[in-house]
Length: 303
Picture 1 (cartoon, rainbow, N blue to C red):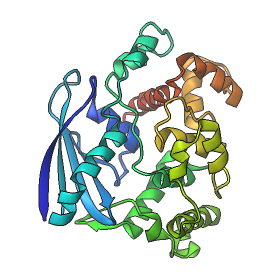
Picture 2 (spheres, one colour):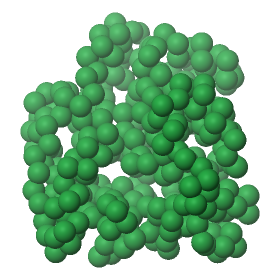
Picture 3 (spheres, helix red, strand yellow):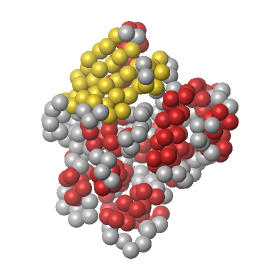
Picture 4 (cartoon, one colour):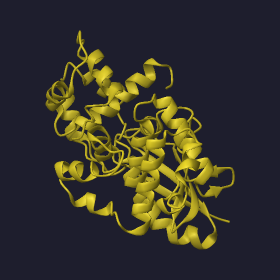
């Protein structure tokens, strides 16, 4: 087993704790692990599991992170540069958010939350496939239940590294019968959607890489052709899978409730009203989504 220690600079300001919480959402998440100081996750490099562990020892205004990369010697050596690039994307390390801070500095609605959570970067799932499965798992159930389902999926079908597991790759799920996925707690429709998506990607019949080159509307239209993916899921994937910061999943029940509280509305805003309310923060509507999430986690005593 080999272990590499790698320094990771980040554009200031940056807070690892807040960014990881925006990614993991619940304490029960065993895919993205956080012990109060260290972020740990199992990732796949050419189908071999490697473990990354990241800590931030410097202050948010002069951020410097340290990452350890563990795996068999060949995998660790070859994975070094690809994993650096992937982690930078996942944690938004290179993103310069000074324009966002300038935009919201005097905003009476969101300014307080922006100052409170200064340093959070918009996190992304490592693959569009994982973003899609997160969307499918969390549809029409509480976030707590959705995270539990994803944990079970990783434990049962993810590549193991010691007592941890990576999120399953499409190839790892393509041959699994729908009924076996359903046994984890997924509805039949969700299990079928997961199975079909994994099989289509593994066989080459569906290519998610093309989505990176699409406009937001083109991506939403294409993603919505996949079983189990509607408007909310597609907008969710734009933000959490592609890093499109102008995407605010307006059908998200939690986000709707958060906006209602933020604007002191006496009603739950609909899709069109949410788009209008969040347009004041364009092109950073999605970053506001993460600030509202952190605010809710804090109100619930999770962070």
